[in-house]
Image 1 (tube, rainbow, N blue to C red):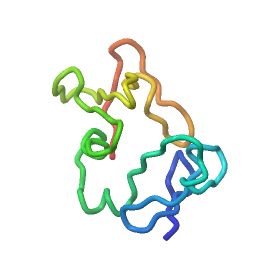
Image 2 (cartoon, rainbow, N blue to C red):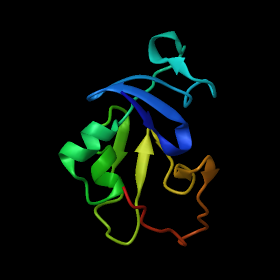
Image 3 (cartoon, rainbow, N blue to C red):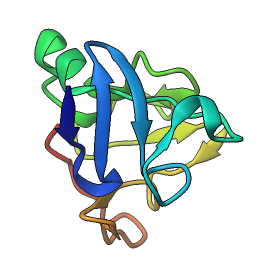
Image 4 (cartoon, helix red, strand yellow):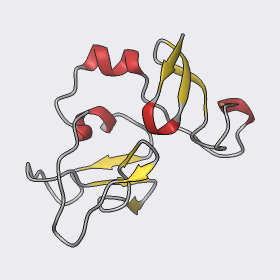
Length: 109
């Protein structure tokens, strides 16, 4: 199954298992040929889990830590592989979503 992955391009997936994407190498590359760790959340996984927020969608992804500062319903705070990406980690259509200081927002899953 080939799915439109939005900002990362096309994601080739088989159920919960992502096979390839343009996310790691900027060109459609199989995950096994990408020289870095890539964790994917497929459309099937999102459909089955029915997350109500971005944090619900990435909560079980390896390397992602959600609610690092405690649960706060006003904005999404999360770390990826130890780096705080609360202000810089949300992209839509390959563009980073703006955030400044405490001017954060919630993202639809």
